[in-house]
Structures are given as structure tokens and as C-alpha cells.
Length: 283
Length: 319
Image 1 (spheres, rainbow over the protein chains, first blue to last red):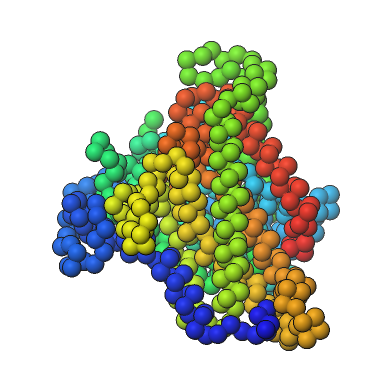
Image 2 (cartoon, chains in turn cyan, orange):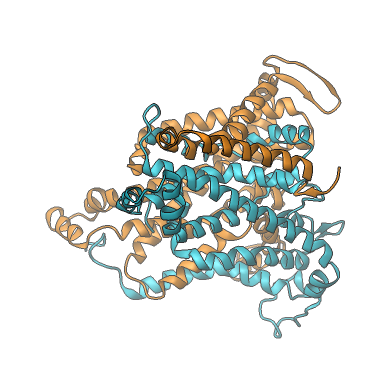
């Protein structure tokens, strides 16, 4: 029997597969959420169902959101500032470069080569940049500052934004540009009065992806932020103490860190497959 | 010092802003036809300058440091190729190369294989597509470091994974303490995180295959394999290649999860190349040797991917 592209698999198989896969994806979240409501003595076993296996408690949340809030809020504030500023800077630079590549032809270095050049930035393992960045920011007296993290994250995400914005501008009919040119718009006016507003939704989506990547970034935060500029991933890592990891506290902080990206992703989920493959695929 | 904004004194912010303002003023003074003729360069230049300053220059700097004896407690001196020869004699280097290679090979193969298989099973219009897509994207947007730490809550001795195994009659597994098993725990976490994404991308590719084409081909060849090979796969190819490249790249950079979960241990069992480089540079402060490791990493990846690009003719995806 043909099972390739034409004979569709039975509906029941599909939903069994999908549901199993969903459980696979969601169970760890269920586990972490329940752990965050457990008392220390319950967190160390396999206690699955609240009220049946164990008595849930709000104590961990009270402790983190209440008593230790000044500490946690510092990380949240830094993460927020760094992620927002990074999104803003990458969007400004990236949309200009993307527009240039989508609308104009370069001759000495043709457009495809420039694209491959940006793509090749993605191949650069971040750890290669750790040492030079540390020394550079030390020389600029910027170690442990939000600005250093913003600059680093901008560097990592910029090529991604250029590629994705080029793809978005390509889809805007070029006739609109020509009409605006006839009306007497300069090149720059065409960019921000015609193209940019039309690319609005793509711009928001790219911004949200950059925000999420920056929010989750760990390696450079670990090497460039110690105290003042500490971000939320560093604070998750800081939940271990002499007695070992405190699962229940880790769970609370982990959830606090997961919530913003997940909410943002809700808004752009249609765009994500396309975004993460740099526009090579229309999802 | 005065007041700091994002860690930089206000006076230096003013200096930077003045510089930018002067450049913009100069550009505005240019005759309009010059400006219009070169506008594409003005659009692209800020990004290119940024990348030269923040990528190209640091890379050259790292290359330079890799020839130096530099670190905590040593006076900086020229070392020639010493850092490189020492790296090759270091058992830690080979251990990390072995682990990273094993990780990339197994994790990426399983993710792509499983993703492809599941996509073939599900290739059909699905109800509640939005819901499932969201569920599958959840793992992807968890901070990897949270994943590493929260994995502890799943894999400790009496945790849910061992309880589940006990139900199946299998003994408890030391997920992170046994150096033979710890690498597979890291792979399992990576597979958990990325299989749903591979599945989504490949499914998007599969849905491009026109139904009639598959049917017609099946009538002609009477072989499912041939239909797959000559009809289905060519359609899925760009999706598959893209997701493969992406996964290979990300897997090679592996850092967050093992750093958080096992800190490279037990012993060197889960010390990926990135972790080794990081520890060499920032824990032992041997910056020269750390840079040598970094440069070797870069060269390997460049060679690996230019070969892969050539073989797969990946750049066609972008035409």
C-alpha cells in the first residue's frame, strides 16, 4: 500500500502520535509547576497528583516573590532592559541592512555573497568571542554593565535580523516604492514611510524572537555579568547552596523566567518556523 | 564618575551621541544625487561597521592572543605555537572532542529521524493545529539553563524518570552520576527540546508535496520507497537541509544544559568543547590556551560547514 504523500494516514494514528508528543513536551512543565508548590520533604519523591500525593503549599512562591523580591527583581529588571534594548538596536540596524539587500543590487560584492556572509556569522561559536570580549570590555570599563550585554547580544542577533528583514521586505511589492519615488520621496523616506510600516508585523515578530534569545542567553551573561548586571538565567543558576540544589526554589525561578518568552511566543507562533529557519521556509 | 546609564557614564553617552549626530549632519549636507546614488551603502554600512568592530576585530584579537603566554599570574610573553601544541597533547581536549562529536552525531540523528518519522505519520490537515504547534514550541523557548537545572528535578534517584522505569521493571539509573550514562542524559534533554521543532519544520515541508503527484508516481513505480526518494524527498529537501544545518550548528555549540546540569562531569564525561574553552579561559584564566582552543574550534567549524554547504548545495535554498 502506498503510504507516501497521497494515501493519508488514519486519523486515529495522527491524534495518538500528536497526543503522545504533547505529553512528551508538556510533562516536564507539569512536573516543574507542581514542584514549585511542594514542601521540601515532598519535592524529593515522585509525587504526582496534588492533594492526593502531597499537600501543596504557596510557601516557595511567597518566599521568592515576597521576602527575596529585591534580589529576584534585579535580575528581572536587567534581563528586561537588556532584551528590550537589544531588540531595538538590532531592529534599527537590521531592518536598514535588510531593506538595502532586498531593494538594491550590489556589484563589487553581489547580494548573494553578502547574504552568505551574514549567514556565516551564525556559524561562529559564541565561545570563540568570550575571551576577546572580556578583554575589550575590561579596557572600556564596561565589565558587569548592561551596555556590554546589550552590545554582545546585538552582535549575536544582528545577522539573524538582517536575513529575516530582507525576506520580509522582499514580499512588499516593489511598485509601492516606485510610486513613492514618483511622488518625490527620497530613498530614506521610502524606507521609513513606505516599507517600514508595511513590514510592521514582521518587525514585531523579529523583535520578539530577538527578545527571547536575549532573555535566554547564558554564556555571555556568565562571563560578563557578576553582580550589577546579573540576569535571570544567572539567578536560576544561583539557587544551589551547600546542601545541594533546592528544587522547589529552582522551580519557582525557572517558571518566572519561562513566563515572559512563552507569553510573547503566543503572539507570533505562526511566524516562528519561518523565523527560525531564516526565511528559508514559509511556515 | 557621575550618573551611569546602562553602566556607561552620561558624559561618554554624550560623546557617542555627538559623534552620531555629526555623521548624520555630514550625510545630510551631501548633494542629494550623491546621497541617492549611494543610499544602499548608507543603509548597509552601520551593520557592516558593527560586525567589523564586534566580530572581525575580536576574532583577529583572539588569534593574536592565541600566540601569547597570557593569563593570571604570568607576565605576558610571546609563545609561538606553544599553546597549540599543548592543546593537542591535552587529554581534556581529546575527551571534549569525543564527547562533542558523539553528542552531535547521536542527538542530531535522533532528532531529525524522529522528527521525520512523526511528520510522515501526521502529514494531514490537523484540527487544533494552533494548539499543537504551541505545545511543541514550548520546550524551545525555555531558557536552556533553566532546562539544565530543572532537569535535576526529573532525574534524581527517586525522581519521576526512575519511578517510570521501575513501573517497567527496570532498575534505577544514575542519570547524572554515572559517567557512562551522563552523556546520554544530556542527549535526551536535547532531544526533548528539539525533536518537536524538527517535526514542525519537516511537516511544513511535507505539506508542499502535491497529492496527485505522489499518486501518479505510485501508479508508475509501484514502490513506496521510489516515490519517497524521487517525489516526496525533493519537496522536503530544503526544509530538511535547513533544519539539519541549524541543528548541527547549535549542537556543536552545546554549553548551557551540561554546564547547568553536570558542570561537565562526572569527570570529563559531559564536558563539551564550549565548556572546555570556557573553563580554560575563565576558570583557570589561561587566556592564551583558551584562545588557541577557540581558534581551533572556529577553523574546524568553517571547514566542516563549507564542505557541507558544497555537498548539499545549501545556498540554493536562498535563491
